[in-house]
Image 1 (cartoon, each protein chain N blue to C red):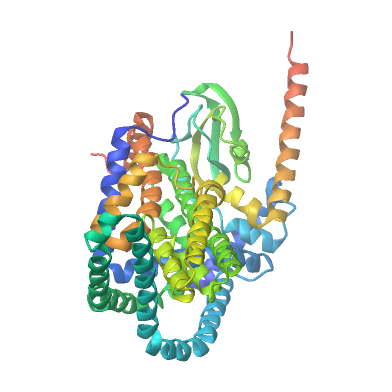
Image 2: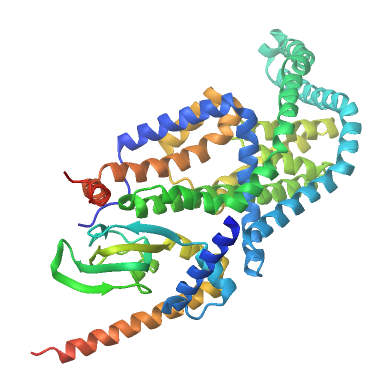
Length: 158
Length: 373
């Protein structure tokens, strides 16, 4: 019974991961490998996930709840974005150990999955195909964000 | 708010040395557990890439670990079936062979002293050669009983424990990552990223050290074998492998390997001292290559510790736990230093503690939400 439940929960989670842009191109067996690397974390509303300036070690996927990305210590006035279920944040931590560019706080009690840079680097060495697919998707997502940023800059009144 | 992830300074050194010493003392007390665990870790790092490859071909981690560990166990049994009877046969003549090697060494010393006495008259007047000869005979007769037999007995006593290594390696391969995830899941959110970072540093250090050590042994064994074969000493392969493995014991390993090679050369070519000199020259050349080329390219700076505490740890390891202490001192010190540096930085970070306290308050508020009077 417990085994069945475990498999069912793994199946559900793999489905959730597959819907994320970063892992959209992965095959089921590749998703299972990635799922094996994820750390599940539960956070309460108001909790700080990471601070601005902190060395990033992991990317986070929101499985439930909402996360607020804001300027350090200014959740009300310094809102940058809100990340909901099925989205992710902190993805730059996969690339290097540069400081976090903003603070992440929990807007609603949430369930997150964290993929650490160490595990991603391990993936690059042992499962190069999976890692290259993730890296390609990451590059696409960053490119998209960059384009959106430029569009927003152009639209901003002078 | 850019904070450091690593602590440094004298406190980190002191804590590293103190914890490593305690672990070495514990290892010496529980050698039956420390030895198979060490072998299991070495096996783990050898087999880890194979398990990952099998996983990628669609096999689950559990099955891959079972297949690889089972395969290694079968291979070990297949090797042992013909090897054990051969070793038993060899052991009958091993005492005789050792006596022959010691005699070879004694003859070498005798001839060298004879040459020295012919050069320096005062040595002849002191009857130096005869005196040394008597001491060498004394040593030869007592060495077997007092030193070698107990050492071999102790090594033989560790053999059943070593057989545990494949089982431990199997569980490390199958559940290692799950075990780390379980530990990480018990860590409060505020310290989560630091913990993951610490695990990675520990893993990298251990992996670099043990895989480096293996590569180092392979290259050393090849060089010794080639050198001994060129000189013309028989059994070059066995001698080369043993000399390379002895190099795993810091400080005394190289000396033992040199003595072994000299004895082998002196026994095989008793009337030709130049073979002995060539063997010593070859040994020194390989040590030189080892220190300046092979070691930096293999084990290198995997431990990433300052030379001062490194040497200190070797002496402490040798003092508190003998030869196993010498072998274990560096990997244990390397891993402990990574843990101490990261934990030190966590302890030293008030913001992390504040975040943790805040999270606990939030949790308490959630738990007590309907319990207000």
